[in-house]
Amino acid sequence: MPTADLTGSIAIVTGASRGFGRAIARELVSQGADVVGVARNTTQLEELRGELGDRFTAVVGDVTDAELASELIATYRPQTLVLNAGAAPVAAPLQEQTWESFTRNWEVDTQHVFHWVTEALRLPLAPGSAVISLSSGAAIAGSPLSGGYASAKAAVRFISAYAAGESKRAALGIRFTALLPQLTPSTDLGAAGAAAYAAYEGIDVETFTKRFGPILRPEQVGHAIVEIVVAGAEDERPLAYLLAGSGLREIW
Image 1 (cartoon, rainbow, N blue to C red):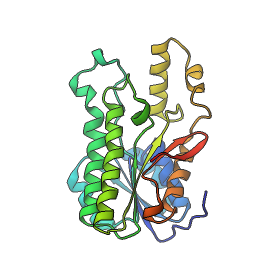
Image 2: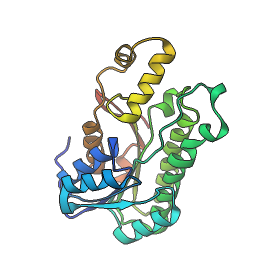
Image 3: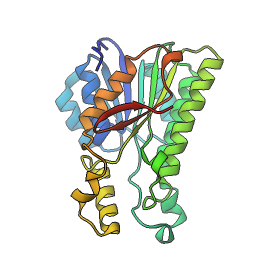
Image 4: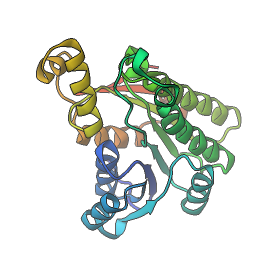
């Protein structure tokens, strides 16, 4: 990973209270950034505040609220914006889904990325700012037990790419990138998904997860975010990366 010095910079991380978001907030603070963490869970955010100290600001709120996105982006004008928040999908085959369960991730994951990305363009953020949207490996491979999760994450990837095009067209210099982590049992969401797929296939979780190779750890996601932030100029950056336990790979 490139040596990073983000001292004096400001980052906003959505979904910062647990999983990947918590690891991302930790890594950004360790690299010198002041981090604003946004999530619904007050207790978990305050625990992270206690761990990270004054360099972490906890904001309890609904990331799908367009007004909240506008307010926080205008107030903090982050150099790094990490859109990680998302809902846990309902684990069930298609015929057992309802429209409400099927569209859950569209209403949370995709909607939240849409609001924050469009606000970053409207303000706009300063040239050189990095906006990283967390998609998923499911956007490529599909996720038949997760309702609309895969399509919601595919839409996140496309929104990020569309924003990159708009930034380039208007010469804004804002860098938009999508990060697609593979399924991992090392977060609560991933563990639930792995357990559901293992049960569906009639195998144990260890056998199921072995097919993905080395297990992706949350700390690796934090490292990958920093690597993307300190990467080259806009025209030299890929629009998307796949992140597995074996490392980061350009895919688009």
